[in-house]
Length: 383
Image (cartoon, rainbow, N blue to C red; front, side):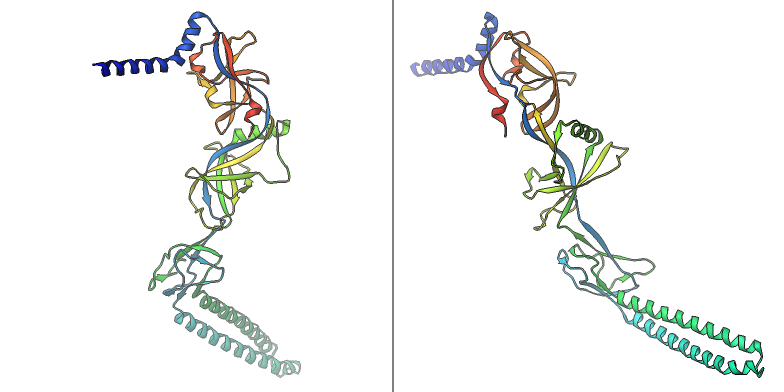
């Protein structure tokens, strides 16, 4: 019984100790005494503003390997998923019919060239005879026309030979670009190029690699206005820096902004941007979802407050609790900008020297007398 009574006494003391802090504010309010609070004294600081945007990884270049002649695939010469160089042999297509077509066209060319020689010989024989009227002018003109026709046929036959040579060369399918090749889309023994060019494989260049992401058009306009007004500054010579996160893990290599699209998507109101990143290890893969962190510029007079100091009402408006010159808690509407870490940028509603309550703001109604228990400066939080 003595042990039970002792345990009950210990639990009662523990409960009273836990309620002590919460009861201090209530007791102070009931007695009309100032409530001790922790507040932040606003002091502007230079801050690089960044924004996180959703994006997708895209290859630097993409080439679809296609059959350019009809035939049976005889052999595949690459390993699926391997890195290939431009000009590497990928497939061999049956070449016997193409070789036969080349020989046939070469024979037609030889026949056309022989006809040219025959026509030239006839014209040379008629030239002196037509002058002495040994042959008629009509016969001479017919010989000239036959020569021109023979020469045209020879040119056509020469083009057919060249086409047949190209077709024979297309029987060896080579890599149009260097990069990583995917799976083979055809197998040995397949008929390709019959009536249309058949896709055989896909090659993608992935070092460097792109990250395509979008940003609201109104944000782009606001940033340009801020740059024009001098509120934001940026090194004009250096490209905007970008970084990416994959599944919450920051990718170590930094990238640069490649370009910003000149049109706005009418359906979404977004502007497409593209960043370029080194990818020597092939960690980033096309189609991968990433979060892109874009450096927008440096605000030399940035005002930030901790996230816990911001309250939002049912109207969605952001509010903070400040301490007036009379030592009374006052609610103030503010406009928030970009979020940096665990702090919100305040674009309107606060000025240097304001005291913002940062702890227990939901327990202190407006009009409550307060006193500073702990005071800190925003400059102390400068990164």
